[in-house]
Image (tube, rainbow, N blue to C red):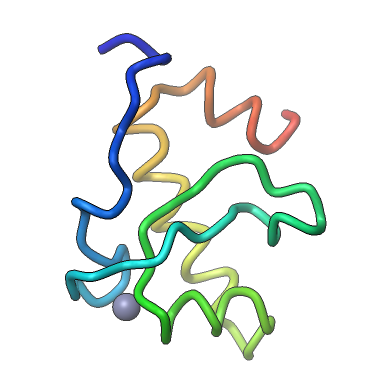
Length: 83
Ligand SMILES: [Zn+2]
């Protein structure tokens, strides 16, 4: 798959709970903090990520990283994190 292929985030279920009707959640940090990737999260899990609630950011990060790797490839994942 070409890394430039446009992926419609809203067609995907929430990475955490599988619910449809997702937000385009900026990752690894909210857009105002420089997040350049968007991942599918329902409103509830989007808020847990952005508000840094408990262990949720770490849990969601594992799922988001796996999803980005699967959808865009390892190189894009490295770019997202600046690795
Ligand atoms: Zn969810």
